[in-house]
Structures are given as C-alpha cells and as structure tokens.
Length: 231
Image 1 (spheres, helix red, strand yellow):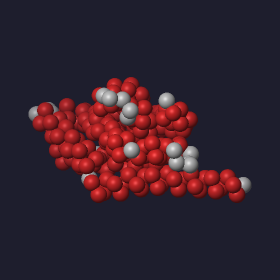
Image 2 (tube, rainbow, N blue to C red):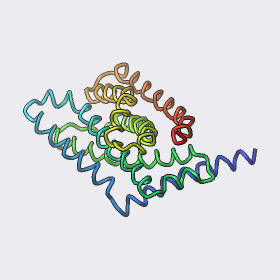
Image 3 (spheres, one colour):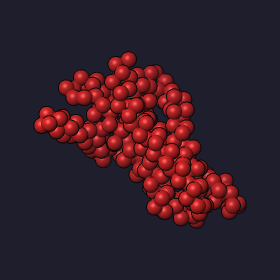
Image 4 (cartoon, rainbow, N blue to C red):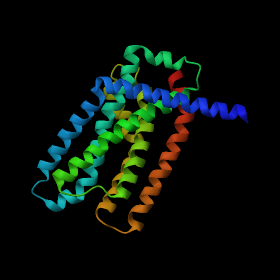
C-alpha cells in the first residue's frame, strides 16, 4: 500500500514538474502565448467584419467561430511546444529520465491545456465585445474546459508523433483534425445550443458525449505515448 502511494505521489510530482517547467519557459519568453493570441485576435476580427451586417448570422455562428479559432490557434501552440523541446535537445533527455513516460506526457498536456484555456478565455472576451453576445454562461465554460481537455490531450500525442518529421507544421493539422472531429462537433453543438437558450435535452447529450470522448482520449494516450515515442 505504501509503495503504491509513493508511486502515485512521485507520478503526479513529475506531471506537475514538467508542466511547471513549460509554464516558466513561457513566462520568460512569451513566444507561445503571443503567437497564439495574435492568430486568434486576427481570426476573430476577420469573422466579426465578415458577419457585421447580419445579426442573426453572427448569433448562429458564434459557437463555430469560437471553436474553430481555439483549434487553429491551439495547433500553433502544440506544434511549437514540442518543437522547442526537440530543437533544444531536451526531448530526448526527458524520454531517458527514470520516470514513467506517461507522466511526461500528461505534464506536457497539462501545460498545453493551460495555454489553450488562457487563449480560449481571451477569445470569449473578444467575441462578447465584437459580436455583442455574452458567452460567459457557466455551462458554456464547462463545455470550454471539456473541449480543451480533449483537444490538448489528443493534440499533445499527435504532436509527439509529428515532431521528428521534416514538415511537422504541415503534418500536425493533417493528422490532428480527423482525430479531434468528435471533440469539435460535440463542443460546437453543445455551445451553440446553450447560447441559443435551448432546453437541456438539446445540449446535455452533446456535453455528455464530449466528457466521454475526453475519458477515452485520456485512457488511450496513457498506453500509446510510450509506443509513439519509441517508434
């Protein structure tokens, strides 16, 4: 029992240490968040001007605009977070460390999740201002967290697969978009139904499906990461 407790404690300690390392590096450089936010800001402004004359179209498309922008700006962060590790040579050092490799994966995924959530919250503020539609509903925030979890967990795994490829920036979205399709569809449908003020029977099944997909991704990545980095 004590050995199991020590393993769990050391496991989560590694997860938090890896996440803290990435957070400290980003606080010093601010390259990841700045590039993600710049892309997200430009995308939202373009969507805002494109839909400026049609109030109904803006209300119907705000959920899609939110999630498409989160996904594509998040992919910039996913690609850069793993590429920086490889270019510095620290990725191989992490992999040969005497710790469970899934702890390294979840540490990277946790850091990516925090980066993505920061951008997502800033996006919600921008969309509220530019589209004149309040997105700050607690159910929408739950969908936001669930969607970002599914996206970052699967995205961290796929970016680990593509980081050694020459055209990794091009390969990542090609590999990732089909994988996150269930997350994207569920998040858009749940968010759209909530913002439209529909009944729980219209958005709750999508939220439940989104939570189920997150659990599946969290379990699958635990077993696949070691195999992916070995290959």
